[in-house]
Length: 333
Image (tube, rainbow, N blue to C red):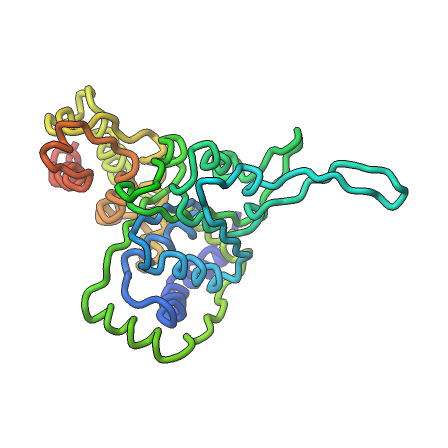
């Protein structure tokens, strides 16, 4: 447990560090302010993040740039239809020792890094996708009956193409639930896209300078969890998540019509934890309902399964979440 003086120093570093981080990322990333904020919240919370967007929107570049800012060991895994679980976690090989004997030795896979970019994760079948489950939840890998601890801090930042694209596999619900956010990256406004074109065709980008270390990130994880949150604000987060579950007394009629499966307990946990990190990043030492509302969509969009009726009527998860947020009964209950 950090002392009060150490906590205040860490809080101040987070506040000042956000500006420094954004300044470094501007060397390679133009625009996408909300996306960057959500990724920083994920890293400061010690959670994983799923990034969804069409090809060519700088998803990979953004993750690599973040790893450079935090001076973390970075590995990129390109997910393909023929990728096997052992290609991610590692495999045993037979090697000869100095005394002439042979033994099986475990060779660690690319999962053994601080930041693992699971690029186009939905291009590989569910069996291989599931190889990440233990690593994401337990921060360890089990192979050949042995457990191997992953380096700390450990993050999985996965990118995926829109599910409507050819050659994609939907992620299992159990794995989706382990991502704090599902961040959507859209096309840039005209002015930002023009700046990207002019910048990337004029020469090499500036080198990103590291600002924090892995030890700093681990300290941030602790200080984020110590941010106070009022019972009323936490209750609003829990009620908002509970209202997405069909057949429950707290579920509005439109949820019962449009949703087949609602969000679970982990959604409320991630919503509160992420809101604590967002409060610090915005220079506040307490959580507000505005923090909860700001993160509700990225927390819930991959945890709510729409019904056929909703799809037929053109209703999206965003429509459901926005309507829930407008219900004053959730905030005043």
